Image (cartoon, rainbow, N blue to C red):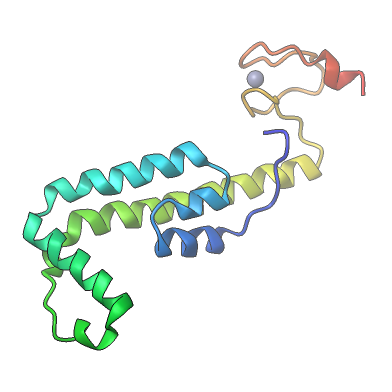
Length: 141
Ligand SMILES: [Zn+2]
């Protein structure tokens, strides 16, 4: 939490749209991004193998022979579980970016937050009332 910087929510959303988890990479939330990639892969277990194969073939063909894709049929409705996880990951990335920017704004306004747990802390105390982290170092600045 030491280097909180402003992140654009819509960039996080677009990156997450291009590839599940990329929005979280932009937000430096590596583990959460990896979790979404795992979730997207896990969601394919709820989709018939034929639909996964058809979608994979269509994506591969789109790169090599874009014209051929138009004549291919992909059972879109069967892919719904995968789309649902992808959509949720995009929303998650957007919300995290918003929350991140809110914290940046509070820091700029002088609101103190615990460096360990990131919760708001009272001006008059030299420890975090939420996790007990000693804040003497911060006070001596
Ligand atoms: Zn704390």
